[in-house]
Image 1 (cartoon, rainbow, N blue to C red):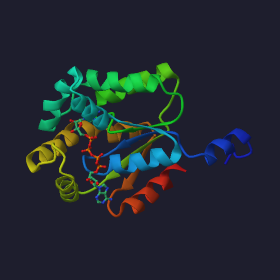
Image 2: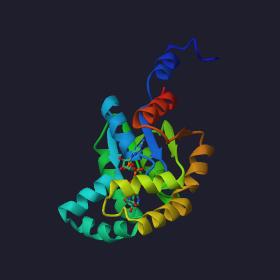
Image 3: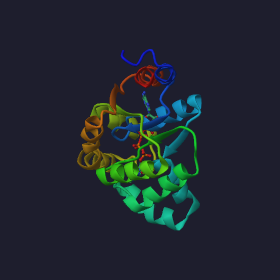
Length: 197
Ligand code: B4P
């Protein structure tokens, strides 16, 4: 490699990536993998789904606004989600793992602008891919409030229409890495580590 004699290149290429996005359909296991990886790597795990559910549980105004939308399997407003992400990222200096955000092109554009303000860059986008039949089975097994079959089908549709365009968006920017999300939690974690090295 032309830069391989440069010490800075060696240091950076040896370290695991520190600023990551997890992308994929509902039930692909983003939350499951993100939690483990963030813990082992000392990254801030920012799950917009978890943060919204915490607002709902606390009965805040924001939570009241989000609750019905989430129960229908639709996306909470961009402004609301962005406010949550912005406050967390502004207050943090180390690495981070964004899980379930962005979920549409408007959110991705807003994130790009926020990161420019913070002088930070996404290093890799991990796309977790899995068949619909397996997704539905996993979510029915989880049994969260928004995990009944009709709502799951709707969330998959919302994913196809609004979130899937982000695959091309990040591929064009040279950031996308796909990982097969079938198999055991440990096997998938191993594949993810493989694309982060
Ligand atoms: P999220 O909380 O992001 O949840 P998810 O996409 O449904 O699930 P995830 O892929 O994280 O799967 P998990 O690891 O839990 O979103 C929920 C809602 O919040 C959205 O519908 C939306 O309304 C709102 N929201 C969130 N972010 C938003 C945003 N940016 N903008 C607007 N709205 C937003 O795994 C699923 C199940 O599979 C679990 O039971 C798990 O134990 C199991 N599992 C995981 N890995 C497995 C494996 N290898 N084998 C077998 N089972 C496995």
